[in-house]
Structure formats: structure tokens, C-alpha cells
Image 1 (cartoon, rainbow, N blue to C red):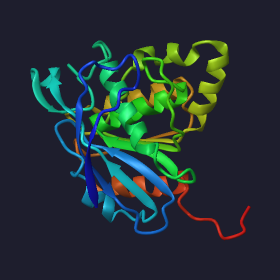
Image 2 (image 1 turned 90 degrees about the vertical axis):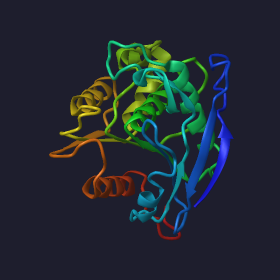
Image 3 (image 1 turned 30 degrees about the vertical axis):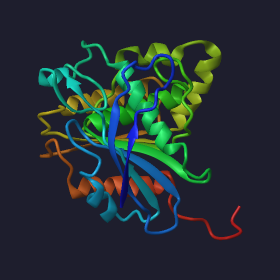
Length: 265
């Protein structure tokens, strides 16, 4: 495992003037042939190293995991207390405005991390809680072909995983997806082809399971048809082995991670 510190790249003219510093980026190297790279995003107040050991122990020897740390910023949900967060949030509710500047900056940082991967490697994004929300926002940027500020989204995503999260920008997503007729066709094709796995605990008291269910419904209704949602009895706001086993099986089949024999066409 290795790590580095990076500065948040500006996704374009709509980015914040004050550049936020990202923390350490931890990397879990593949134990076998490198077939896929997945950026995994932590939850609010956490850091990139929190799940490295768990990710390293998964039966996924062909995946390289990149685990960045979010910038430290004041968070309205915590009364302005500064902590690591991918974007600002007052509360998890469709009635509250989304911090699209913060979301764009984090989505651009994720894309930047993936941009240097070999061309033949499949690319994915996943995360837990606020990290899952950021991963889902990246999925919408990929489908739309652009960030919220209008700048082009440069990465071809193959899979997105969200654990105990929610969908930012759900109120305006349908309008953005429909857009102009020419861009809508391309966005619809990308959305329909992108595999998304959402998992949630039915006993989650931090991000209620209903937010996960509503996120899956909203994504499906606007054209993300390759979506799976799994709810777990008795699971709170944390992960468990059976959930991670599903993630491993799902990623293996969706990326896919089984190398083809030599000469296979």
C-alpha cells in the first residue's frame, strides 16, 4: 500500500476560487494481473486509509484500489465544524440545496485519479455514505458527459458501487438527462449501460434506508436501467462481510475480472 497527498484539481471555470487540499491518497496494489481500478470513497469525517485493509482482503486480486481523502472543510450539518467531506451538506433531504461546486470538485478529483490508468484497465467508483453519494454523482456526470458546471466529464466508467448512501441532485436529474434531443440520446445510452450496485441497511439511522431506495428508483426512472438494490435486515450505518461478499461477486461479473484465454476474440 502506498499513499500521496494531492491538491484538488479545478474542474473548470465553475470551480471554487479557494482550492481545497485533499489529504493522503492510499493505494492498494492488485495482487494479480491488473484488470481494473476502482476509486473508493470514505464517509464524512473519515479518511482514505479506513477501509484499505478490508479492500485488500477481498477476493479481488485483479483490482487496484485508490482511496483518496476528502478535503477538510466546514460542514453545515455539523454546525460549521470542519472535517473531511467530499462536499458541504446541511441535511440529507431533497428540500435542501445541493453543493454542486463541492460535488464537481470531488468528481473532478476522482476523474483525475483515474485518468492516468492504463487504457485497457476497466475503471470504477465506489464508496460508503457520503462517499457513496459522491460516487453516484460521478455516475450522473458520466451519463451526462459533463459536470454540473458544464465542463466535459473525461472518464469512461464501467461500474459504480454505493453503500449506505444517497443520490445528490436528484431533483434536477431528470431535467438534465432530457436536455436537448441530441445530447439526450447519448446520455440515455451511457446511463442504460452503466452497472450500479446500491446496498443499504434497513436499520440505518444515519442515512435511512428510504434514501437508498429512493435513489435507486430515481436513477432507474431517468434511464439507469442496469441498477441493483439490496437492503439488509438488521444492518445499521456500517458494512458487514455478507455485503462486501456481494460487492466482490458483483464487481467480478460486471467489470468483468476474469481474464480471457490467449487468442480469445
